[in-house]
Image (cartoon, one colour):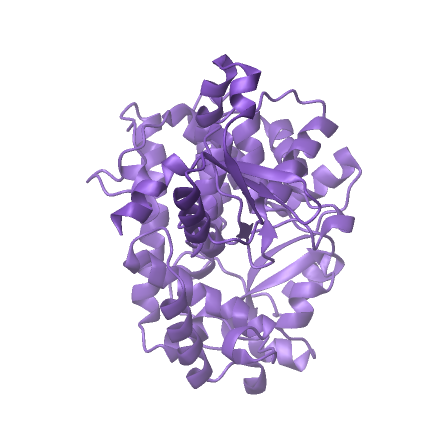
Length: 434
C-alpha cells in the first residue's frame, strides 16, 4: 500500500516546480488550492518529478499532509468556493439576482478577474449550471449512450476502506480504469465502499476518497461542453457550464462528500420555474461533449487547472480563448490541455458535432473582420500580412509585424491550412509598453 503512495519529498518538489512554472487566471490563494489537486493526478500518471513511476493510491489528503497543510482548513477553503456559487444561485432564485459573477461582498467567483466587471444574465447562468451539473452524472451518461448510439465512460468517487481494498487485491489503478458497474453492490456489502451518511464525524485515515469506474469508454471534454453550450445557447450559459465543472473539481476534496454540482442542478430545477430545460437538453450536451473512441487522443479535455493556465506564448488562458471564440472575438490559436492540442481542432470538432444533430448555429464573425465587409475586395486583397506557424511566439510575430509595417498575422499549419487571423493592433500596445 505505502509503495503506491508518493513520498512526501516528491510531492513537495513537484508542488514547488508547478508553482514556479505556471500561472493561473485567478488569485494566488485559489491557484494554490488547484495546484494541490493537480499533484494527485501527476502522481497517478508518473508526471513531473514522479519520473514515470505511478503512485496510484495517492490522494489529495496525502498531498495536503505532505505539504504541511491542515486538511480541515484546505477542505473548508475549497467548500467556501462552492458555497459562493450556490449562494449566487439562491440569491438569483429568491429575486435578489446579481448581474456579475461575484459574491455578496463583490469578490469575483473563483477569483477570476473578468467576473468582477463582466455583465451576465443570471437566467442563462442558471441554465448552464443545470446543464453542466447533470451532464457528468453516471446515469445521464448511461442514458446518453443509448439515445445516441455511442460509448461513454463513466464512474464516480466513493469513500473507500483502503485496508479492505488491499485485502481484495485492488488499488487505485484497478478501481479507476477497469469496469466495476456490476460489482458495486458487492463492494458495498464487503465494506470496500464505506457508507458516507455519517461523514460529520472524522473519518479514519484508512478511509480514502477514490474514483471507481462503472463503465469503460471515452470521456467527455469539458472544453467541448463549454464551447458547445456557448454556441448552442449563448456565452452566459457557457459560463454556467464552466462553473458547474469547477464545482465538480472542487468537491473532490471538501468536508461534504456529496455530488454538489448535481445538487445545485436539482435545486435549480426544483426552485426556478423559468428554466425552460429538461433532461433531453442534458443528454444533448452530454453527446456534444462526448469524445468518440477514434478521437480519444485528438480532442483536448482540460481540467480546471488547464482551463485557467495562462499560456506563456499568448498570455491567455484556454478559458479566455473559448470565451472569445464563442463571442466572435479574435482569439489566439494555441495548444491546450495536457495533450497540447491546437484549440482550432476543438472548435472544428464542436462544429461537426453540432452539425451531426442538425443544429444550425450562426458563427459570429470577429469584430476585426466585420469592418472588412464594407471594403472593396481589391482593398482587402492589398492588405499586407505575414504568415506564421501555430507554435510561433506571439512576441516574435508582433516584432516582425512592427518591423515590416504589416497589417495582419495569418496562422497556418504545416499543410498550409489557415488556422486563424490575428489583428496585431489588439496586441502591439503591450509590446510597445515594454
